[in-house]
Length: 561
Image 1 (tube, one colour):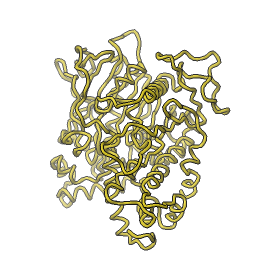
Image 2 (cartoon, rainbow, N blue to C red):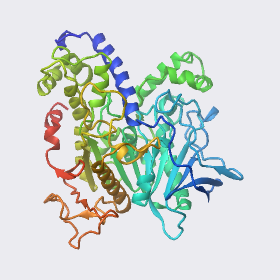
Image 3 (cartoon, rainbow, N blue to C red):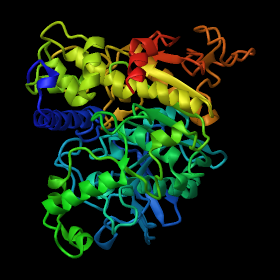
Image 4 (cartoon, rainbow, N blue to C red):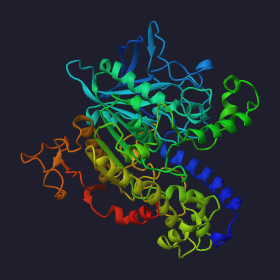
């Protein structure tokens, strides 16, 4: 790479982008699910509990203060003729189905799932219920969609018992088809490009129908997700076939207004682009020139498909499930009118930048223009970005990370907030614990701050293993769980524990409760979260901030489109 961006050939830039995008996406998958590759380290269950669903009886595990039901099918196995078909209802069973261990993850290469997975019988969900059976009342339900670039991840990686117990909610984590098996597009395939999103909708329909048997309120369902899971929530907000399937939405680091021409934030692509990608996959596995391409593809071994698919995947729009790009739909106000909690992390791009630097691509004053040209803009805009984000030393990694985070996460999240807030109540946060527990082993080339996925250990025990948090970080985790679960219960994160005497609320926002809140179980009220501002989530300093747009150069990114 050389300093003059105008001196690069298209081939050099394309090659660099492919190499670094592959690196970045692989790193993102590790970050988004760090710690989950290890087997769960939960205390052995104290007993079992049996619940009747419409498909049959399921036997889950009783733990100290909560119950789990794992590997419960919500749709038929998408195998054989059902590979690349819309999800079908699960087949009823006789007897009692064991639900004390996670089922197989959807097919993916090794990473989060040790050894990967080639098991297509993967349309399952996991349910965490606080306390013992209580038929007298129903609890709010949070349905969680995992991240991983639409190519990796598993619902079972997210141990939700802390959220379920502290928040007194039922948490459902979902496995959905990934990679080419979830998002292949071909002219002869109904549902092309959106099979994974259709799976998510099937899981939501199952929740509406069945969750009452587990103590959940089928009429109080919050759809939540992070990264690709967060973008999935955006897609479901814009999907006409998701009408009535959920009542609130939580979007973490999955901005609805991301762009497919930038490789880090998840987004959707036109159906024509997805079909071209599908044609390339068919050619790679020897099905490109046969008469019946779909039948040929359905006979290809899963491992061969995984080896041939692109590193990153996106859902397709201009489809029945997703007629319009979610970014366009939300800009036009064409989305489901539900309250939204949305946010990003302060240093969202640092993990990618660190991985790319460690892969042997240093960011220096000489190489920086080429990196910008490869990732952010055409030549006429690249020079402006280099001026806005100058690299003065050989260590330009943090500058690269800031540009990724600002362009692909912080500013699109701010734009999404503004568009949604014109129609529905919206609360926006920025997770900013610069000492968040590291998500990967080893020493990064520069401090990562609060990178992509670093908020997850505050909500879940990833892989069933609690992270090593300080006392202040534990308090922040409790505060976040309180906000998330109060939002699920009342459509307002300021539940009965919000402190009206905490940080000054936005004068244009709602007034605090004059009667005062009741304290949390630990006696510490959460600060009031105004609607017309950003809540900065920092240990022992949760407070509204008005500087997020300026800090992330959003006026600049808005100016260059």
